[in-house]
Length: 108
Image (cartoon, rainbow, N blue to C red; front, side, top):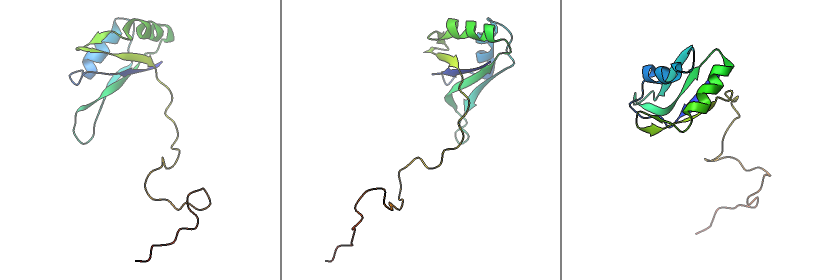
């Protein structure tokens, strides 16, 4: 079972995350996600537990609990979504999707 852990303290390490979840069963992996540019924690991580029952027990017990001075959010991780294309913003050709189709530059 893959478990998402959010609102982590910047001091939380892979080892301290693993330790918190091992109280509820076997932990295959525990990772705090780090920012590539700064090397600092991004404030969330993932824990993999082979047993779904142990994973659910950990979620129930740890969600909202304190870990390294922060109240953490714990729930089952959702699968990563496929890339969905542009999110918007920036310049795009409006085509016939709305906006002023009769745009003409101003004459000064």
